[in-house]
Length: 113
Length: 108
Image (cartoon, rainbow over all chains, first blue to last red; front, top):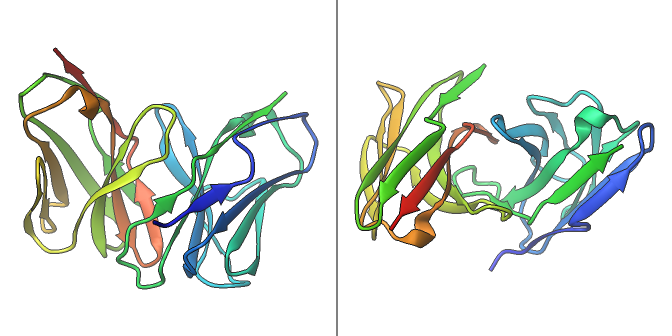
């Protein structure tokens, strides 16, 4: 089974802090994604990476950046956390064929105070 | 841009059938996925349609009409464990965009 592991299940950070959310997958998938999920808004794509060192902006990239130095790891960075970034963050991966389903991690519930 | 619409909530009785509709207007289309998400858990894959027609997988079926920008997920013989959110998602190149999800509540 594909395993997508997010480093933290719950995080509490202060406004202005730099925050790193880590995601690791063990199935040699080319594509990796970061979403945030908010009630009534569903899953919104922040950034994705179709290969190592490659990244593309999703629908809501403002206030975020990403890093993909190794194939198995995709990091989401909040340069200066704000209260409107309080959310559930979900990482996902899939092979590069474009038609395989996404496999999700269990999510990180981030609270910015 | 992407516009993916699905109803917010649906309620049905155990043993019944429920149909969750999804309409989409997207800049490109490479297929449509349905996911199930139980409260507090990650979404899990249910089905994928790329051609028009019906795909059946046990109690769950998914239908696609590309010309109408329309899909539905059919859940038959509902069980209490089917109470969850159901997410419609459209694939465009590498990017998977989701609707807001439909919360299905199954009552005894």
